[in-house]
Amino acid sequence: MQGRVFSGIQPTSGIHLGNYLGAIRNWVTMQASYDCIYCIVDLHALTALHDPAEMRANTREVAAALLASGIDPARSILFVQSHVPAHPQLAWVFNCVTPMGWLNKMTQFKEKAGKDREGAPVGLFDYPVLQAADILAYKATHVPVGEDQKQHLELSRNIAGAFNRKFGVEFFPLPEPMILGEATRVMSLRDGTKKMSKSDPSEMSRISLVDDADTIALKIRRAKSDSILGIAYDPENRPEASNLLVIYAALAGRPRAEVEAELVSTSFSDFKSRLADLAVAKLSPIAAEMRRIAADPGYIDGVLRDGAARAAAIAAPILAETYRIVGFLEP
Ligand code: AQP
Image 1 (cartoon, protein in one colour):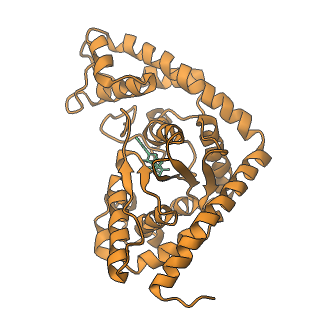
Image 2 (cartoon, helix red, strand yellow; image 1 turned 60 degrees about the vertical axis):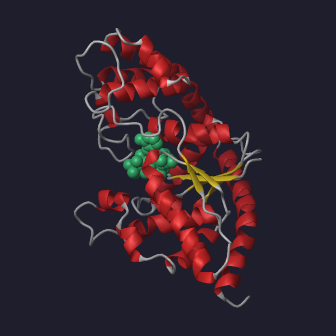
């Protein structure tokens, strides 16, 4: 194995094509060559979601989506963040070595807090410190994420370095972000300059992993287009065409340039019907498998329980050593 992978996904409802192409699909591939730990990060989701019933339902739904996409619980560890207390425990230690100034630079906080920074929860501000703890509680070496998480990963490296320097140790590795594949930043179907996101109020802006074939086809047909003949990659001038081209290449598993060469004289509407057929062919089997798995919550809970026990067994000695390094007495 080439190292230890950690990555997480929030249990916010409506996992979409961006999550799938930017993260989950890479997670599946990495199982062949890394020790993989995948986490449903409910503590992170609490920064935005306060409906307990929704949190519970989403957590199982995301687990079903990951299993349906090909995360194999026999090979990888799949668990829920709140089941392993080492995450918030280590986050507290990191809170005490992380300068406020580093967090003040995080663009995701600025975007999510919007104009009401004073009213935003402390948890939202502190989110990247917990993220560093998620990764470093396992001394993970590689973190596959979409491009939107690049800045947070840089911060995790800085926090690992700050801890090591402060206590004069070489304890935490500096985790490497892995931003893989053709679709590292999938954009909204309604606006090619905005990230495809669960929090976009328009359902038509994203393809959800639970969408049926008709809905997928409808969303692609209605996706914003332009009137230039041929599909070309030109994010500056043709953001929507570029985004759909990237999605097409990623779903087909082919290099973008190769697909682009094929589409130089294709009309937007013909391209959309090809894309719709491809998206339905690739995503419908995942949706069907998700429904099958979701019908058995006992199975999902069992997988998550087993995953939490395996995750805790790795994290506990790393946390204990961290506590020893900072000078906490053994209980
Ligand atoms: N549009 C995207 N393109 C590529 N990758 C993406 N990811 C998210 N959106 C895109 C990647 O998905 C993984 C899990 O993300 P998350 O659960 O942390 O969700 P998020 O990034 O908060 O996703 P959203 O949809 O943008 O949620 P909201 O709207 O709540 O902020 C990560 O690896 C992420 O990079």
